[in-house]
Length: 621
DNA sequence: TTTAGGG
DNA sequence: CCCTAAA
Image 1 (cartoon, chains in turn red, purple, blue):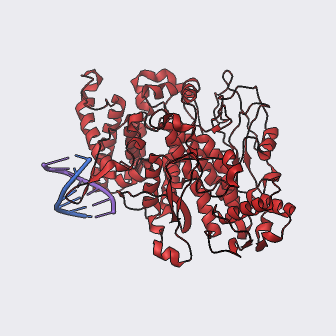
Image 2 (cartoon, chains in turn blue, orange, purple):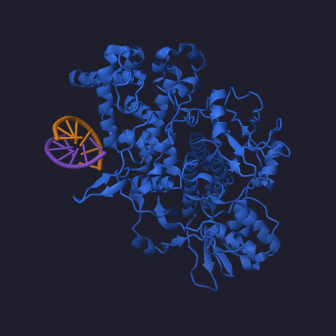
Image 3 (cartoon, rainbow, N blue to C red):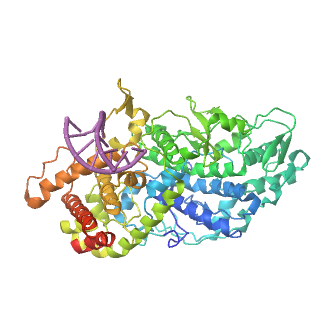
């Protein structure tokens, strides 16, 4: 599926009045992540390709598209580092995608049937790859030279004011009034390709001239600097190479990607190159956090949004420049929860016990961020993710799910899921945006073929179906209600009981989108595969356990049986909870029937059960 | 640990 | 949702 997607994907990005780049929806963000992954793997094999994804700038206007930098310039020994740097660049995009003006999004959803490239299980991807932002080293400012370059290489279009949205190029109908900032140029910017040869071997920064330091800086971060301050440069480079802000030594020697302290005690974390990668990957995760911030924007975060950026553990005053340039969004509670959940769920098997970690010479550091603007410090800890050190917000939580057997299982399922997705995309009819809205799932858009589209069409919106026949469909994904946002419950959703167990504090009403997700999951994996559905379709819903899914499915089944036979003419307000749209219920019934059928088939003839599933689906409708 | 089913 | 038996 990734191969099918054009690697050049543009995202909805809004530029705020203060020049801040506001990302779009979660789903888009996630898609970018997908992209990042794609780019990463691609670049790992293609050393020369430095892909820079579009950035459009309209002269004085700061309307820009995310710069999605690939992971170019990889050399075997340093590829990890490169990946980091490049990823860091990509992070910017992620960040940009984090937020989008709600109204704009709404409008976007309404006015433009967006057909994003197919990308399934975005939730899973995002939740699996995202983490907190690192030290804000590689910073693409809104007017950074790199972006300037990019801007020039992309066609600019009619100017709009700030706050305008730039439509993604994957949105075929995005050409409506005033929002035509489209560009589909993938700029190859050689200048942005850091020269990492400088990073080889030992570098004694003390002996370098300012110019050399600047060069090294560029090699490290992929962007040039004009800073003349030697100390600053050295610090920056060391920070970049060691991925640590905690650099205050006066003498720097970098040897084999490690900082060799010369005149001071180890105050630096020494991380392997692979750690850097993990860190960079972890950067993406912050994206999910930001999306949470987005969702909570008028809720608890509220006006704090603008000030919700903060720096992590940057004790160095030299960071001042960076502070203004790039601020790290403070993780929301949901983010932290999810992150912790993810980390526990997905990477637990790879965790190295802290003791062992220290024994390996890795300092298990707990850093207290000293945010200038944030009174409350954020405690982070170093964890090992996939054998790498990452910094994650520290939080105690209860794991409700057993860890994934292997990270690869995710990819495996994803690819298989995507395969099915592709099939669906060509065989089924998806939502239209109006259908989406009808289903109250218009908050966000997701690129995913929706198997229930038929149901909605069957609901009398057939006239819409022509507009969406062959393109992967847009579908509401995230919970539409703020009340349902996980962040509102944060990490104290469970409370220990006297009996030693844990009990949930709140009942979380199932939202329609969750139900849809569930039904889709069932249709994909079949009823009974709850843990798989949970992992793949509800990866970002840390509060839904597989048991929950099962229970909900049971309820849905009950509801559908009580409902559908008599069709829609009956009393529409039977459900105490949210009224489940009849199409969904009938879908549930269908799936149930299919399921029982296939199991019967399994029992009887033991064959052709898998084929019957998909065939029954289409034949049924 | 996961699933199925009762409470 | 919780709990638990069974796999």
